[in-house]
Length: 333
Image 1 (cartoon, rainbow, N blue to C red):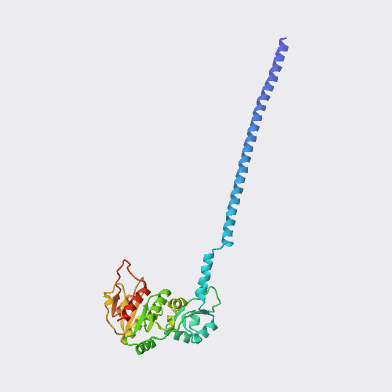
Image 2 (spheres, rainbow, N blue to C red; image 1 turned 180 degrees about the vertical axis):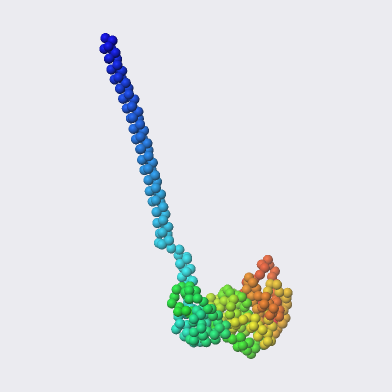
């Protein structure tokens, strides 16, 4: 009995041990499998979520790119396009380029404001004499590179030369002096010094003609030419007043002083009020730019520096307004 019970007990112990061992490992392995499957599933879920998020981000970014692309292509900026188109029309209505077209314009009696050409064109036998003669008459001629001329003409086939027509013909300084002396006892001529705004130039020409001035002097450089904008602002005054375009303003003032003209400059720092100025000799009224005024060298050429008395808090006047007020006082003497 002992043996059998011991055997039985041993067997039972072995069986129990196996069962206990089996049950222990089986439970743990099941748990580990569950844990593994849970971890795997969570990792997969994270991957799916990350994948979805990346897809959403990619979709959103692509949508933004498409929207940006459409906004730039399908819905262009109309204001910039209209402004660019306006600029092209404004710049090129009075332009001529190309060797043959420019040469015919130079050979004819057309009024020219400005010429751009390469050094090869300027020194060529065909153009040299014509360009030299026009330069002496006050036409602004600029030697530029081929690339710069292409920029100015927006890539047109310019062949190395282009010009801008003037809206009115000019006369020489000698012709203006003769015309002034023979047609008025005390003529007044207006000279512009550094006024580059075409609206101011046009307004001054309009005022000068309205107050019966004999002419207007415009320097070759640092001044707006007789462009279409000037003619429009002048409102027809260019048809009734002479304009002389000179190479050097100070030399022109010296020539006018030799012919009996007094040179009067307008400046806010002038010590003499224009309302008390009583000279009745032939006058040249020099009007400077709003920001810089009359240059120092030109001030030295002036016989008088006049100012306009202001009563308000405004420190200065527009150049064309100052010219109109001054001409009103000077022509009423």
